[in-house]
Length: 95
Image (spheres, rainbow, N blue to C red):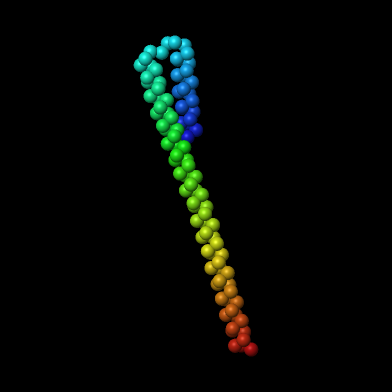
């Protein structure tokens, strides 16, 4: 999405420079071009902010997943230790 917006921004600016450079642009054309470039820049800025937000959310998700995995591993180790204790206690009773 942001690549399309950046491409639009660059294309719009390139067309604008060609039109302005050829001297065939009216004041209306120039003002329309400026508006389009500002809109494209605004869209690119919004896309960049959205990408940064998505990156932050992905990093938070990875962190939370790692914490959940650590908790699951700790619970598994605790369960295994309790099972071993129970087996030892049962074997002492059976002896």
